[in-house]
Amino acid sequence: AQSVTQLGSHVSVSEGALVLLRCNYSSSVPPYLFWYVQYPNQGLQLLLKYTTGATLVKGINGFEAEFKKSETSFHLTKPSAHMSDAAEYFCAVLSGAGSYQLTFGKGTKLSVIP
Amino acid sequence: ETGVTQSPTHLIKTRGQQVTLRCSSQSGHNTVSWYQQALGQGPQFIFQYYREEENGRGNFPPRFSGLQFPNYSSELNVNALELDDSALYLCASSFPLAGNTGELFFGEGSRLTVL
Image (cartoon, rainbow over all chains, first blue to last red; front, side, top):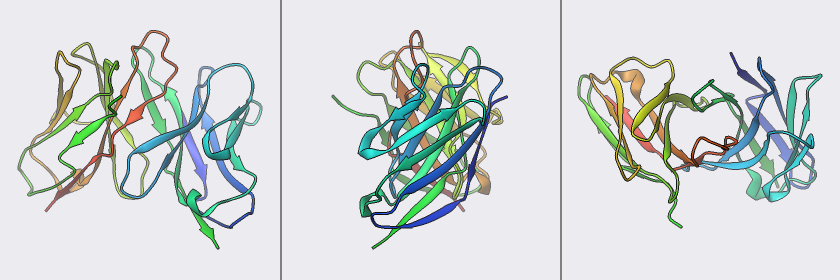
């Protein structure tokens, strides 16, 4: 069965600093991996996804993530944090043979300090 | 292009009651999934509908049921509500399964409070 672990339920960074949100996954098949962002009182929005091919994936709002099979990781980064990045971030892995479901981590809340 | 819309946005029920949540999928999407997001947790998969048939179910009891209609809209029904059912219920639609690479388009959710 697939699973996702997000290290750190809450991360604080200063505006302009590097953002690093950690995600490790467990999957019995080659994984499809996702990062979603959730702003307060809103649904989830896809930031980026890895399916096959290039292991460094670029997403919206300047975020990127690198798939590292040997480390079973898919960490999310952004070189310079902006106040508008404050939100909750969820890592997810596609699972469910025959059906089509995402297994999410518990989320990491990102705070950006001015 | 209209996105995923859900109704109602907020509702309060008491234990033992029944609730119906509704979802209109994004144009062109024929697959609808429902997720439960408890406070402080990630979304958990409830079930998915494809061409009006349930196509996968998570670890939820039978009192959670659903429907998908010919226009691809969907309902989530929960019977005999329990306090632990208090959560944000998210609907997500996606492109047809064939060739799909996993991107889900989420609505803003229906927040259910059970007293």
